[in-house]
Length: 455
Ligand code: GAP
Image (cartoon, rainbow, N blue to C red; front, side, top):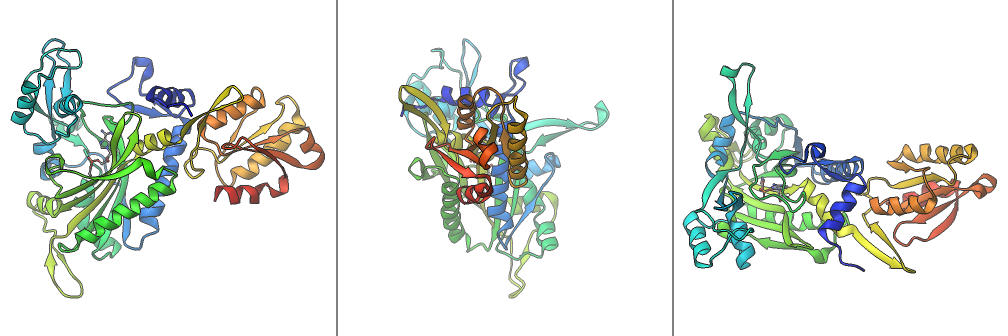
């Protein structure tokens, strides 16, 4: 099998409507991306699978769908206004800016995330590290990542607020409202899926690190002495879930963050990393945030977030175990893991070997010829029947070989072709994406065949 490069993935995603650079006709904009018809279906599947697994199927989890812009004090309380900053250096010739720790890490093969400005300056000078264009670098400066917005109707009354830097902060300030309205008792979790925004200095590769992205997060509220078992449970549970999506186990690993790498709110942090063609990269985190968030929101808002144990009357500020995964980053992991190139009989084909749960379409239906109404009608009846159960693609363009090629590239597990034989004996050809083998099946048996294969 040929080695797959990031360029191969970029090309496939654009060609097949998975991901487009945002505002491409204007030359793209600020490291943001738009998800095309196939990508949108895949994201939709992932959101639903995640929500079902972690929220709907759990007695002690409930969901939230909060505003993206909240009171600016939220971000002061959370510590983001003060501490959510990356150290940056400037190329003294081109004036391009770079994230300091990334330049150092790439040059020296170390993890310098969390070094102080002085430490970074010292490492750069001692190791004579230059910018990617080969020029000297400025001293490091901090750059806050919160994205500011102005909200209000008249110029004078507009106030500065922030697009949320992580989806979890509204979970914290809503803690008591959710707990009381849903009658939950500790330990219980609140989950949210939604957009987050960060003025990342170094973006990429591709849509791995972007300025607008989506997170799927759970904040589990626990007794102060009860956090450790929940961290272990989330590690096992989340890896099992990732495996159930078809991600190769051998390409995932857990890595504990060192003290210097950890965000200001974390006491313990474990990353889940994936081995991309450009190295091991983090795509999920499990964090112990202690009582940092509820205590701070208490201090800044004047609201007391003390919880009273119903049975014992014991009072405490709940501690938090967090599970957080980036939706688009997960999509990139899935595409990278599923992308395969097969060489057979001097021909090559690209196959996105996605688990059917994740694939945009579970099957595709083709009439052999687009200009034969009897074939089209029969194929359409099958298409409409299947469509009642799951998303199905329809293709009547070009020859069947080309249609297979297209569906393989977007990961459709089964292609069903209605041909002249179908008109005589009510059978169809069903082709398997992974083996490219075809079987002849009666239309009557199609439902049960697909139900078994897609289960
Ligand atoms: N609430 C905790 C939190 O936000 P994080 O490690 O900063 O923790 C959690 O982010 C997840 O969000 C990451 O594991 C990653 O998948 C995703 N993520 C973070 N920054 C991102 C970015 N700039 N672009 C895409 N995904 C990002």
